[in-house]
Amino acid sequence: MKSNKHKLKRKQKNLQMNHTVEIVSAHVLEQSKVEELAQIFDINISDIETKIDPSILGGIIIRKGSVVYDGSIKSKLENLKQALFNKLHTA
Amino acid sequence: MSTKSEIINNIEQQLETYQSDKVGESEIGEVIEVKDGIASIVGLTKVQSQEMLTFPSGATGLALNLEEDVVGAIILGDFSKIKQGDIVTRTGEIMNIPVGDEMIGRVINPLGEAIDGKGELKTTETQPIDQIAPGVITRTPVETPLQTGIKSIDALIPIGRGQRELILGDRQTGKTSIAIDTILNQKDQNVTCVYVAIGQKESKVAALVSKLEEAGAMEYTTVVLAGASEPSPMLYLAPYSGVTLAEYFAAKGEDVLVVYDDLTKQAIAYREMSLLLRRPPGREAFPGDVFYLHSRLLERACNLTDEFGGGSITALPIIETQAGDISAYIPTNVISITDGQIFLESNLFNKGIRPAVNIGSSVSRVGSAAQIKPMKKVAGTLKFDAAQYKELEAFSQFASDLDPDTKKVIERGRRLTEILKQPNFHPMKVEDQVVSIFALTNGYFDKIEISEVSQKEASLIEFANNVKKDLLARIVEGEWSDELIEELHTTCKEGIN
Image (cartoon, rainbow over all chains, first blue to last red; front, side, top):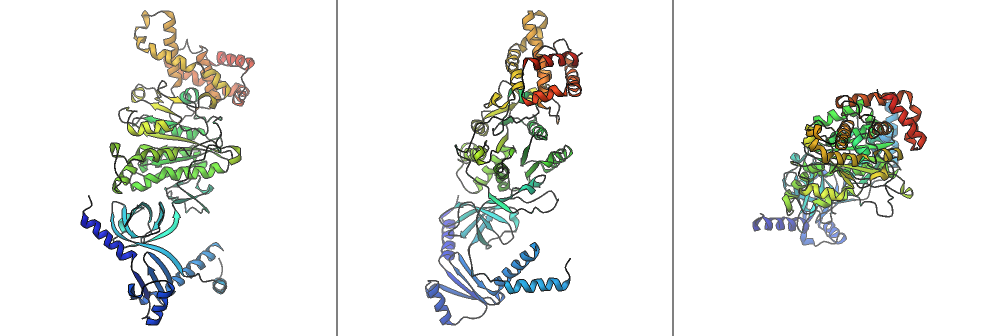
């Protein structure tokens, strides 16, 4: 039987995930850029958490709640590799 | 094999014409709990019911419980590599499997992956697993026979293409044997077969597959295997994968036979999954929708009208009973869904009557509409004779004290029982069956000793196949005339002595 503590924990985790916004970039972003992003994606500046991850190589990844917008260079390269592989495999 | 410079040129070309995708949008969730093959996930706010999810370990999951703040997903595959904090992605696709003609002759798992070691399957199409059954307008009555090759079934409980006939019995009563003999008998009948093995020992299935290969049956059969050591979600999905593949063939106008061996294990796996998903248990701890589990599966077997391809799917579900109790929960559920049942009894099996069919309790609701005319004519009185014999069977111990008429019924009944016995893996063609039963009902075996009846039957069949090929061909065509009857009499007289 799920205890109330367990239920509360789930609710907390839920809020954590669905009501936060995270912006991951390879280098530190200027505040003006962050404000611009906030406008485009319709988010409150105060909700944003920024994170630096050099492994994405460039671009940004924005997680708004549970939706992820992936504009990182790393994924673009991965997609390129997959597309090339598919084309050459079927050729 | 291209040269190095050719390959480099190719890659350069592709790079020039490559169009980078727009920013990728996906929806994610985070695993907060994983146990016993079920993952609880937060996030995934827009996930659909029964949508496929991907885990970082490569495993696929299915979102089944959509609750307010958490999603309960079953993991299809190895759940040992999934941990708390893993990011799960939506695929946007409702559970589907690859389908195609390449599946014929292969052994696949419920996800459509090849597991017989004969190379990867290169299919192009996929079909959703959980489709709504064809509606009333798309169906047409069942009229074509599905010959099982088993005398007691083809004569007394005939099955038609598009019917659902349940095979019911305790363990070790010959349920799988009936299904396999039916598959073996479809060799020249233009019927594609799908055998779904649910929760069985993989060694047993391997032996079955090699038997099918030996008999050349793998040329038209696909085996869908969810072995005993697979997680319960795989056992739950296996029958649906089987019927999805069958629907692909039927849509092309083919006649398909699907065997579900057995649905009891699927119900138990579904119970296990539902209890782990915290769904409320009902009778015998089965979830409330265990009837729907089987009804939506079996309703997909039907005979389609020409407008919709003219194909058909015949289903032979197998249910294992405990101590012959056919009024238990799952057996009664499936009996009410199917168009008849073949009831196998342990005591008949132990007495040497194999196939151990209890003729009195077995029924086919399609009946003689699924028999060729000759068979309909010769088998007409068979059931009545069998019933009469059964009533008087108890008196057969006093054979010497009975009046001649009763004795006659008993002796005919004993020969009837002998004729209906059949060895495993030896399906009999319908024309041979007609000759044999004709000989029986017209008294040609009455003077033969019980112990010699099988032998005499075999030599009669051999004789007919060597000398009276023409007659047999006419029977297959469905002819039934006085002249043909005369010729049958002659054949019997010459064939038995």
